[in-house]
Amino acid sequence: TMPDLIQQSLCIFGTGDLGRSLGHRLFQSGYRVVYGSRRPDSCGPVPQGAQVLNHAEAAQSSRIIFLCINREHYSFLQALAPQLNGKVLVDVSNNPEKDMFPEANAVYLQRLLPEAYVVKALNTLSAWGLQNGPSDANRQTFICGDSAEAKQAVSEVCTRLGLLVLDRGGVGASRELEDFPLQLFPMWKLPMRIAVGLSGAFFFYLLIRDVIYTYVYEGKDVSFRILVSLANKVFPIVSLIMLALCYLPGVMAALLQLHRGTKYRRFPDWLDRWMLCRKQMGLVALALASLHVLYTLIIPIRYYVRYRIGALKNQTTEFFNILAWRTDSYYSMGVLGFALFILLGITSLPSVSNALSWREFSFIQSKLGYVTLFLCTLHGYLYGWDKFLHLYSYKWYTLPGYMLSLVVPTVVLGLKLLLLLPCVDRRLTRIRRGWEHTPQDPSVQKLLI
Ligand SMILES: NC(=O)C1=CN([C@@H]2O[C@H](COP(=O)(O)OP(=O)(O)OC[C@H]3O[C@@H](n4cnc5c(N)ncnc54)[C@H](OP(=O)(O)O)[C@@H]3O)[C@@H](O)[C@H]2O)C=CC1
Ligand SMILES: [Fe+3]
Image (cartoon, rainbow, N blue to C red; front, side):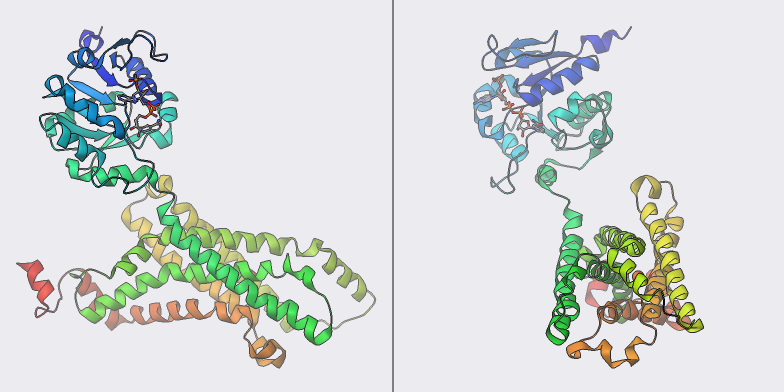
């Protein structure tokens, strides 16, 4: 019923892992597959119905040739130039490490065969993923090449394989494409480093204040506190600081724009990088906040706590109304803050945020985000209440951890309040709409010309 499709054959060089998986998928999609191999008679198993020939013969069968060969072996293709000139060569290769070779693999291939049309594609897929059919992670492929017509031909094949094709431009973009598979959660690196660094620092700080101090002054060993009490201080402290760090770059960018009087100037690189990983920063903070919630929920079943309650059983103590208010208020702020925090986390998931308009997304991430930060900071302040008045809070003249955790959020919220002042807000809006800029600024003039 689809004679044109059944007739069309595609050529694959290399019968290795990727060659076989790709051939299998192409065959399933209705193409005839012809392999080019060094040893057509003794190569490994190939998909049913596929033909295996030597390279020169196989090249005759199709205009498009997928090179499922490692880059190190590309040089043999030069001898096949007469057969390969004018063909579309699909480079799918990756390197095991970054910057192994001076030029990108596809650029190298194009240099070896200047008369062929090199297209980089499929390198971000895996042989395993191809064999398993399109799953979520394997549904898209980046593609680049200098010939629009060759790219179009390869795109059609990829589309038939059920892949979403994302055009990245000329062959010069192939270095970027080849670096993709080598990345390991690039956006998570900075947030994870901050989380680990802050957690370590606060752990030792609190270890000295809570455990070592008690040991030195009271001769009591309370090291059991490390596992729950200490953890339940470190996690909320780091979580609150990181939540504030999500909003600090935005505030700083606004201040920078106000200071420069224009939006037509790039932010410094570090600020750009910081802004780009805000989502990951927020999700790490959410994970830590969740740990804080779990640790808090298990407090009543801890042996230490049950022991203390048992010991107090026969004493009649007075009911302090103010204490009831204090604890309830900080718990309620914590609960509300955490609920909003989860909402922020959910709306940052791609499948959810894709369903939101830009306006809805920025409403939740910015307005509700600041409300979340405010509630969580208030939770911290109410937790402290009047403790800062008591001398026992300052062991060895050091501040309690919760006080340190309030510094960054307080600064961020303060600056945000400043930005909300009507006169400041009006100026910022004018700058962001491009109505206002400092004309004597040379970089702006360059942009305007
Ligand atoms: N495996 C994967 O998941 C992915 C692989 N890739 C890329 O695909 C390419 C192939 O990978 P893969 O299939 O895993 O590798 P394999 O080692 O499994 O297969 C490579 C094939 O290349 C051919 N070959 C080997 N040496 C030479 C040589 N000296 N001269 C000519 N041909 C040779 C062989 O085929 P024959 O014996 O038939 O000649 C061999 O089967 C690589 O560039 C890789 O970066 C990209 C994305 C994912
Ligand atoms: Fe708390």
